[in-house]
Length: 170
Image 1 (cartoon, helix red, strand yellow):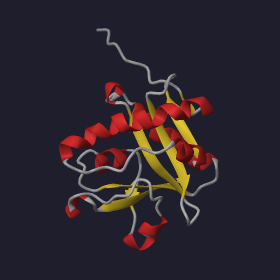
Image 2 (cartoon, rainbow, N blue to C red):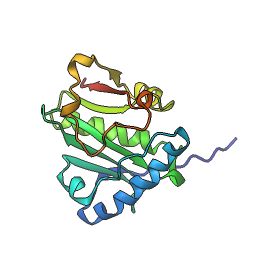
Image 3 (cartoon, rainbow, N blue to C red):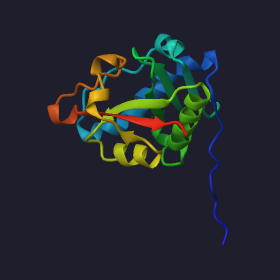
Image 4 (cartoon, one colour):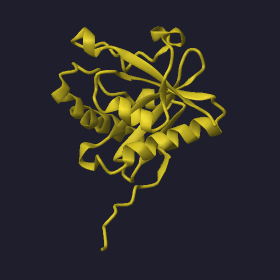
């Protein structure tokens, strides 16, 4: 039996001319949260914030997904954004982007890659756990260290709980 398997595009650093496309891609990706009544969500990142990132990795040409890694106040590498356009979801792009982000962080010498996410989003925890992330102690998480653009404040306090997870470098 033959089975068609769609190839995942190569993950690469974004070109400067592609940064202008990414806020719209992020906004489209955020529509996946509408049914969860989390919101209002913060606006997408700006071209300036993308330029200031440690790295922005993209999938596709033109990009259909991206991840942005920022540096936190404590010097940690932080996966600030993962976005895949809904028309290209469920094809392994998100996993490929996270894998590439972890590889980038390790090659750049960071001992871990952190992220903050909504605890109540049903797919977030299992997805990141399957990618090797683990929840870390609240003692290590100082919310004031997180970048402000993607504030986890939400309309319902129960939905605003965040977790910090870390990818240990092997």
